[in-house]
Image (cartoon, rainbow over all chains, first blue to last red; front, side, top):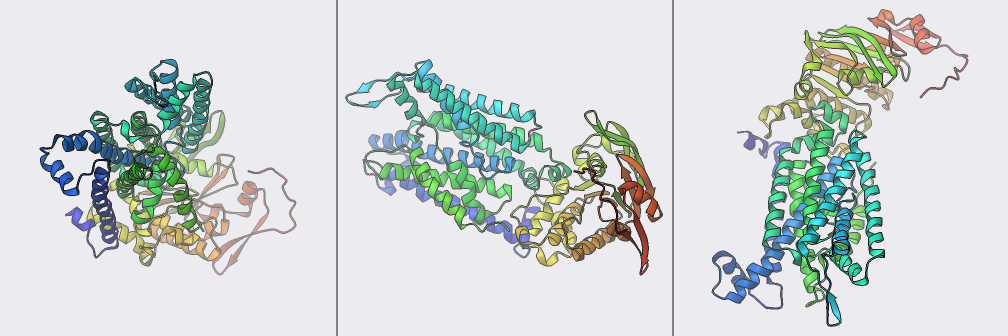
Length: 358
Length: 260
């Protein structure tokens, strides 16, 4: 059978394939204890065995059941789904645009979402702010903010693709359009904030801190559905993405249309990022870093790299969330702050460790 | 047989190729010669369908190439660009991707066998597990050629296949190209700059001047006259050990013409 031939351990390719499948399996298995740890953390102590039995069979204790199914599990799932989605998108963007710096946050998508949220909060008044005692800003209409953030990110994506289309969807055109769009939208957001009240500014700022606590079952369902579609599509087009690594002209000679692949790929991944960012706020660095972290272990074959990057991203965001809830407990730091904090030095370490290309 | 009839192409209002007509038998190597900007690479890109000619036809065994679907074309015509970006990948996989036009979702045993065969044919069998980033220029060019051959093309288009290589590697790679052209019965078209390499290894020659055909034929079209005409350069043709060698005459006025 074909599959068994490709996995024949006596051939070089068989060994490569076996190694990559092993890396995927290790990542998948590492998610289980990490998820369990994430479910354990909280002010109310629950033992691991109770968590597992509650997950499998439910629980008589309504408090435990409520804590796990309504509070902790949605948060853990959101970390897994958002981490996987951001990392997958970053990885696909890096391949499509042939640029190691391509990521949702460097291509104007996140800035588009932030601008959309600012419009909702400042102009549409969705961020009805209340002061509770001396502290805290509460956001009012969350779904309107999310909707506007999604619209902002999508419009930003469409604008970038439209500009790049006039340059035959070349990779450089797309990157430059993304950077320009990001700067423009940041300026728009700042302009809005300049004329807004202090509380509105605080609310928009709060929105941009990526926070997994915003996700519920419904958000998770939407993210999971879209993640499945994008991941499936990417693996299906794995060979075309592999061909693109050798340049547009070679890809074309191999029967792949680079422009078409780039257009659909960017549309799908930006859609995924837009949804995640609209639900949770901006979570930087996961999409940029996960592919770079996993590539030395799994290689550049997109059929393995993309699921590998997704699993790595899920693990990263889960770890960041665990840190965000424990480091200053009981205060929960928004996870976006942790990813940026840890991301920058990690990224530099990765850069310095790598041998310079000859 | 590959037949190109009256092929013309222009970038906007700027005509680049004008009514190019030639034909090529399988198992023969054609060198395309001419100065920078004479349309050599543009001709190759038109044949690879990276560019669409405004006029003219390309026929392979009587079939229009322009009517083939993208995937049919990729099983028929392979194209090696002037520069290919490096990818941090094993030599085996760098050649395996040449099977893309024949691949389903799952790799078949014959794809792996064909890849191994191409590595053997190009003398890369011992390199299969190495990263392409660790290879020399000559080895990389062999990998690139093996990848195009893995497509099992009837027509092979090579844009300056031995540029940037040392003289030893140039001879090795050209020798490889000629042998495989014969052995696999491919119609190979190579854009060449080195007249001596072209003369040594090619069966046919197509000379371009300002996008027009100056000459087409066997090695007898390469004369001191045609070279003077095409390159504005005085040369002497000499016989060295059965090889025709082109030697530019000394003490020539620099042309001062602005080239790209």
